[in-house]
Figure 1 (tube, helix red, strand yellow):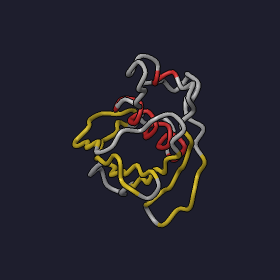
Figure 2: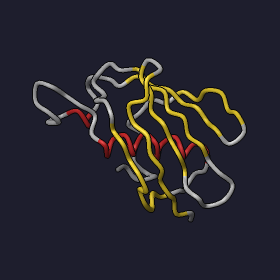
Figure 3: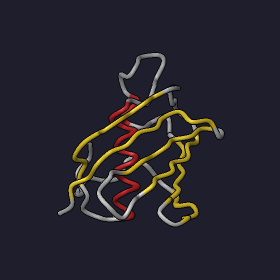
Figure 4: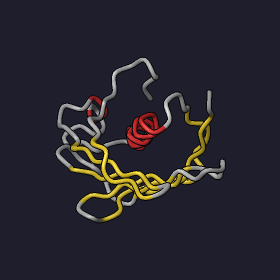
Length: 119
């Protein structure tokens, strides 16, 4: 994953916010470094890149957070170059963890729950 000092690999657009739910979207460019070698001839966005997408979105909500634990992660469909994805993040006020869903064309492709360390 990138560090707070490294450039953001995803160009996220913030969407509507509804209480503790935040929405973001982006297109996955074919030249995204995460696609290199994963897998030759059939590029797929790896799970670590999807966690980086989440980290980048969370950094825009609360700068300085660091991923502490992945409590659950389900990848049900691959993400490929050119996909337009929507990310919905639910940020509770307590430390129960952040639930998130990644969708493509309205269908859930990834979902999970993670916990963060604060500075």
